[in-house]
Amino acid sequence: MVAVTGTGHVLADKGYDTDRVLAGVQGLGAQVVIPSKQNRRVERAIDRNLYRDRNKVERFFNRLKQFRRLATRYDKTASSFLGFVHFVCALLWLR
Image (cartoon, rainbow, N blue to C red):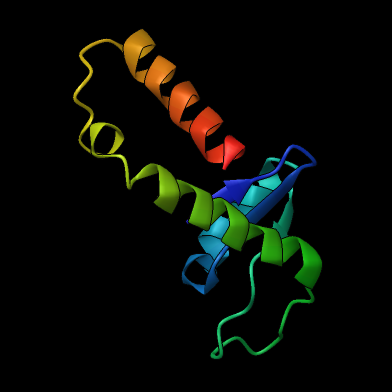
């Protein structure tokens, strides 16, 4: 999973550690926060505190997927789907 922060960082797991992805992210002017795979000769230094935030994003999306209506996209229109996303986010925030 890839998470793009509002501060110009791209957070992703080791599966996205390829030269092509890294070049694309740097071409956008964002900072790469992707841990290096074990087969990399030169290990990149990353901000570990910022990388931990990726886990929060993943857990949030997993909570959203617990609502069957969101996971299967029962709503026909984008506006009603977005309305239910807002409703579920409010429910999760109130917990």
